Length: 294
Image (cartoon, rainbow, N blue to C red; front, top):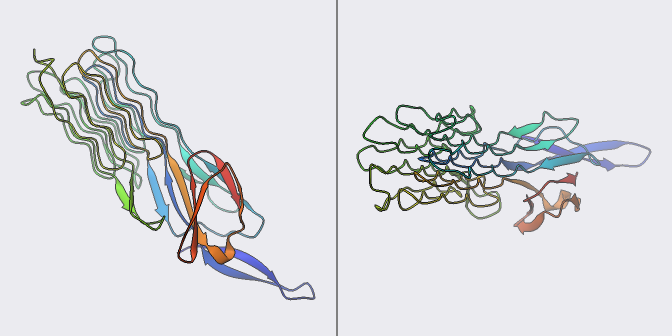
């Protein structure tokens, strides 16, 4: 368990430090899916702990919230891999920066069919390719696009690996499920992987079912020619891959959450975080970059 330190005066210039918990969740931006039988976007990397490091009154914690990855605007055969998400971080001169890595983009039939590495890896496109690698301690690999009659996108990785595309049903792989936390006082799940785009095999208008992972991951399109769906903003969820002739979905932006004992809360913030209380604790939810002064 890690602590902040508040300096107290006792007269005659004597000071003492009182240790207290500073808890955090740092979720990076989710990636976009790939266009054209695209893989699902990988979820943003997620780091969480009660151990922020040694801090003293007056020091500034600089918070950066990563954006979601940009979508691929083209489908087969001109689509591109999805854009990777942006990193989220907490920085302070007295601690090692806490950096969650943005999710890796989903692969595309036409460009980089293997999923892109990231906090969690993007799903693959084009049969026989593999999903992108996740970052150790932050997320898992994207799903593969398995060999078969046609091409289906693997699901984006998350706290669980993305599911492989299904060559029999032509369904894309489901996105990996995110992780729940009660840091705000109620359960919130973040960083779900995006669902993979479905194949066609001549069935562009056949109904398909591809689910995004819990925690903001986007469901895949409902038919083989449909556009992908966007990951949920401020969850770090991945966007879904596009169908055969379709664009992908955007990645969801990240979020940073801090929790401190209310008795030690300074109320000095920048960037307009949402501030709430949970029992004896104050919770700051940053959906954009800002800072907190201890």
